[in-house]
Each structure stands twice: as C-alpha cells, then as structure tokens.
Figure (cartoon, rainbow, N blue to C red):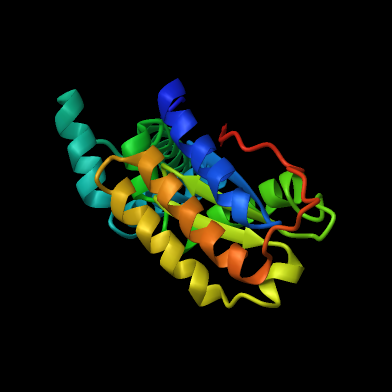
Length: 224
C-alpha cells in the first residue's frame, strides 16, 4: 500500500539531501504500512476465545442445550457423553474459525493487538531495516534510520554506535515529537521531513561535514 505520491516522496528526499549538507552523517528513511502480519496474535485471540466458549459450555451446558433444542424445535434430548464431547469440540472449532475470520477485517485486527506488542514489533522491524540499509555502511559508521510504521502508529530512530555514544536517546525523542505532530494531521511527508531536519541538526553538531565527504547512502525515501 503506497501512502505517498511522487511529489511527497520528493519532499522527504529533498529534506534528507539538505540535512546531509552540513554533516558527515547519513540519514535513511523508511515508511512501512505495518511492521508485522500479527498472525500469531490473531491465532492466540481465536484460541483463547475458543477455549473460553468451550469452558463455558462445559461449566453451564443447560443454556446452550436449551438454545439448541429451541432452534431445532425439538422436545428435548438425552445427550450422550459422546454427543456432548462432539458438541464441545464443534463449538470450539466454530468459535475459532469465526474469530479468525473476523480478524481479517484489519481495523478489528489491529485494535485487538496490545500496544506493547505493536511497539515491540515496530522496534524489531526498525532494527532489521537499519542492519540492512544503514548499520556500518558508512566510513565513519554514522548512519541513522528514521522508521515510520503507519498501522502501528509508531516511529523509531536507530543510529550507529558511534552516534549513540554521543547522542542521548532523549534527543531523538524531540525529533520524533516534531514528526508525529504533523503526521497526526495527515501530513506524513511533511512530518518525516521535519524529523529528518531535526536529526540532521543533531548530527551536524557532533559530526560536521568534512571537505572530502561523500554521499554514501541513497537519499530517497524507502516505502515498503
């Protein structure tokens, strides 16, 4: 799913190019639709609901059986142990399939994902992109990744060790704050550009650009 058009991509890419004019640091930007498919979370919800329904049936079978008799217009039935076991398993399986099917609707699926899980998956994905696209890929190990995951509403800034040694994590929080303020208004490209400018300002203080500095990483926004 593409969130930005060509002109909006240029806004971010231009911000990266401009920010790197004053620093030897290299900024990589990644915009993701989501950080994970969360299939495991959907399965756990479905399993949990399935076992809950089966447990309720085992503890209070009468309401379920009365409802079944009313639905088929029966006079009541003496259920055997085998029939009750089969009904319990069938009820659990049906609940599992319905719950899993409902979670195919993405708004519900992401609503049910706990916030700590979203934050953890977004962080892990940012680290993966950083290792592939920025970590130690510059001469001075001065790469920084700005990662934005739209579905999770999460932003991450990951930097090479040489930068992390000089810049406290709290400093990146200010950059993310400026970025998120605009993104919440629907200005995704402008928000990322603001984050890039803030990161560039911090890098220029600690890693000013040398005369022989070269652009080692692409300036373009990577949308995945």
